[in-house]
Length: 375
Image 1 (tube, helix red, strand yellow):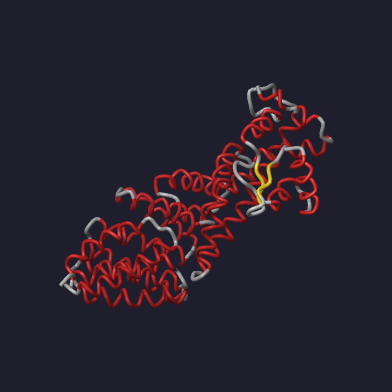
Image 2 (tube, one colour):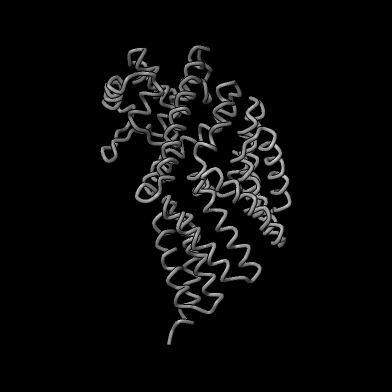
């Protein structure tokens, strides 16, 4: 059915028609620099080509944001022209060209995602910009995941292995655990295929975290133990520390708190020896949670306060929000309701700013305490 709309395409010079067809790899709005990457040209050439396509209504330009997009129907035409719709398949060369465009699209947006993750990790004023950039890239990265898994060649396997590690922080914030699991499973299999034990161990550890978040703690422990074995085999001390900390969290979830503390203390020693402030802060927070579970609230607060100093130092806004919430819980348990409210309000400000789903839970805590604090 889309064939009736091909006349404007057939009137294009052959090279521009081919470039227009390559735009079908974009599932959502795209920027000029992305087109330059997909076409394999300089930005000036991309600008000229896009201008000509826009003049023929084959691509739409949005002045606000300086973004481009294909009309949904025109994307179907482009896909059909490459043999990916219901029409007859074109020549092998055209299919290969689309495949190469897909690879360049995936590589470009993985770099966008990596930069977004780096911005987020810088903390402070960079957090929201990192999330904004990732949100724009995510439809493309999601499409790239499926496309690269289907290809299965060396470049695609390498990309699949690298993807979740490059965007770890922003992906965890934006994607629920159940949706992370297939991505991490594919990444672990890809890392194993190319002999990247470090990558495989990292993905296994993150699978453990995802299953732990889903309440499947025993399964999480299996993944963490596999990851720990790999980290020790290859001498990855940082990975070993992460794996020990994750096992600590898992055993805490099972109610084996004393065992959890031993894992956390071993992880903390590694983090401090390596000067890893981010992980040190996380482990201190986890020790606070463990002691809170044991009813030693004052000791928990000591760990939370050490943790808070580090998170503010490195600008990790999401972690700062979490520890403020934990401090609120601690003071609530001590009966210091007004102080608890102060910490909850600080946590809520952060969660709302970064659009974290935990904001709703903190609001419920505040509503619960509002009546208790009234005269």
